[in-house]
Image 1 (cartoon, rainbow over the protein chains, first blue to last red):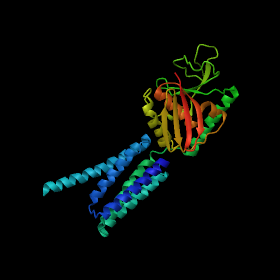
Image 2: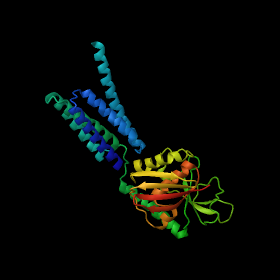
Image 3: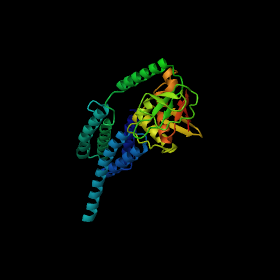
Image 4: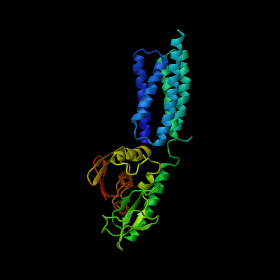
Length: 84
Length: 244
């Protein structure tokens, strides 16, 4: 339970820090925020090696959803570039 | 799953994020705040999904079952007057690893039997006194569903122990081990179980030491014996003798 608590707490802190840093850099693109959140989630999941198989599977599912969102962003950007 | 606090937290975060993100983006025209809403949804998804990884029974129920099992086994050991330290044997085939408690400490360094019957009382040598009790320990059960490659070697011990003790059971903060020629020393930081100087622990080791011994025996594919278990400033130090 403590491991999962620390995972959620650290993820919340990382998301907040990302938002603060990117806002202070005047980043005004929502897809950029989402991309960095996805990367942070995937990296943190990889770093937590002690997670049980069940927890890892659950996080992989979320990572997959986030990655799908990231791919949608990439496709939209590519379409925009091509249509110019 | 519905009653899990992780699930409740997840639902609250997802709903709040889904409401706040469009409000911040469309009405307040603030991208950073809208991004914060998206991060709430992501965090909510993580929390809700992690709820499914928690066991369906409460820790209190698990503790009750563990204690009743330990007390029954302790009563049996006391009744039989067994004081010898158990030898953790690697699993045979698809079975579970078990612990052999010899009736006599003589000739225990040489276990002749290659396989053991699925019985409580087993013979491990050719001498008449080479008899012991074969019991399933908390460590034996802990290996269910964990990928320990039999004979996979020392390299996998730390990872498997962390997965079981820290990740799945949440019984300690971290694990580290050192292998010597015929000895394995494992340090468990901030264990949630206290070592007790009782008959059962002296014979089979504490539940944590039992898990360590079962994993080591399975990974090294050799019988192991808990030679020492002591509380340190950092936590619990378990020393195992690796037998041939």
